[in-house]
Length: 429
Image 1 (cartoon, rainbow, N blue to C red):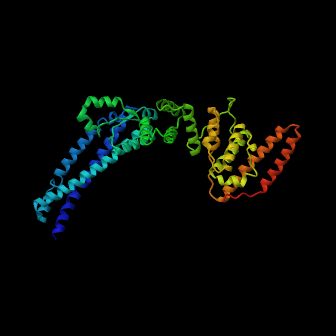
Image 2: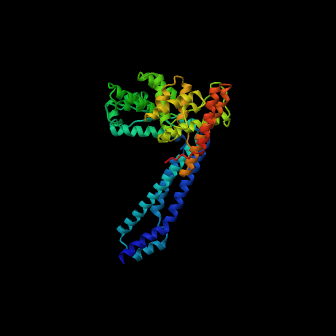
Image 3: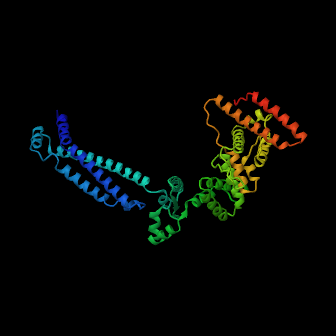
């Protein structure tokens, strides 16, 4: 019976106050959102703190209103007082239950305000243009111990995904900003802010500490890690600028580092450089020549992705079946490597001195393969690609042979091989 009295008392406050509390929280959220939207419209491309003008005052007013509502709610009706006397609940217990109800209401306030803040943040991120976001630099001041360094590296990745640049404040020889400022003061910390390190070079410096620079093998691995980090830049201009800067800082040949970057991009599929014709005239996307080159790229990429297939098709295909001189050289080197069981596209790309040729070679090794579901569809697609390359090769050599009797005999042999390939089933299992 005693428990029922307390529950009745709690239900009394819920009945009289909860609706008003929810209405107040909804009104606060609506007013804050409206004010934020107005300032965001009036102050486009401005920092978040300027757009939030007026919102803190609305929150303070809503907090005071909620406190006033909870203080007086339940005492405004004579019927409520009569109910309290009829239940004969002790005054201390009534105060405790009312305090508990008030705490729950303030938790609701916190939840609603959290949702409002998240919504404002998403709205701001969607409204502010990419040019403004990319112009912002975030200063990172993490602890200088191992955990702080790892956290800084994670934060740099998050900033980069959001289109923001970051700089890392060096806290050495102290652990965190508090210790630094207590020991050296505000002016010294302000000086460290001005000397904040570029986030990319911070990552490279952390990587450098993981390798022995006196060991040639370790040093080479470090240079490969630099190439891997450079591949994270999607823009060619930005990647090239960082490549030149890091090459100067660590005394690496720019050409050698560029070859490492191209090789890593090709071997992992991170970069698919666009093929640029040397004549300056861009070929038509669906021209016969471009279709032939595309089939050759697909075949090389497929064989590189599944080297076991080369043993099944080596009797039908050779480097001479590739009509582009660059493709022919790259395919010949790749097939020799496959014969030895060690294909290395990065090494093949590095054999080309010209940057244009390196880009074309990288495109040859990183074509996007068709996404097919069943094994039968994959076998059919692979057979068609192989047949297309062989047919294009036959037509190319027929057109080039002129009156050469030896070339005519070669064309006849090519025709027979083409007919045999058309009848052959090649299993991908």
